[in-house]
Length: 205
Image 1 (cartoon, rainbow, N blue to C red):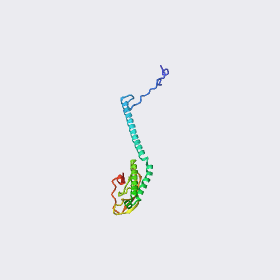
Image 2: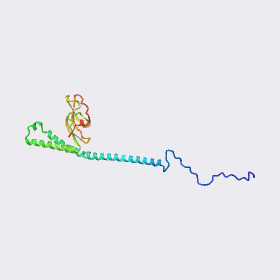
Image 3: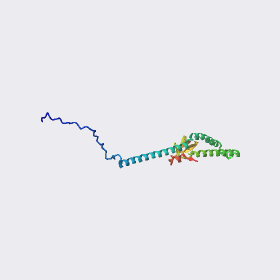
Image 4: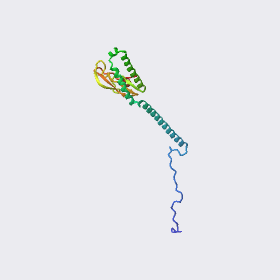
């Protein structure tokens, strides 16, 4: 047989289904259906559940605080209007000199006592709703609670001490409803720093 009689060899690949190679799985990734995969999915589900519970707890606390603030500070506008009544009652009492009280007839004394009783009842009603009167007389000036209107030369007290009150201040909760208008001493030694804001505000019942 000669070279011409030889048939050419078939170099084509055999026909059939294409061969698909199996995807490589990283050693850290468990195979589907394995115990390791189920444990991993369970851990992830537990983590998501804990995160959701934490978010719900934070939402509950935030909502509780917002509701409490709404109850406490919701009367801010009304309380400011009522302060005008308290101011007028105080002005009425201040308008009667101490000498006049000492020599007043029973009718005037009863009137003064009635005004004082009304003022106390009004302040007690305000306090029930979180509104407290500030009495900074003799305390260190605190710009967070007081508004200085003028300075009073008085070397007998430390500089920066509140020596006069033009208008009472009020707080509602931990906020200032109205700062106290005060006169501050100057000329003496510097006043010692206040221990804290509550003490410097001088909140009274």
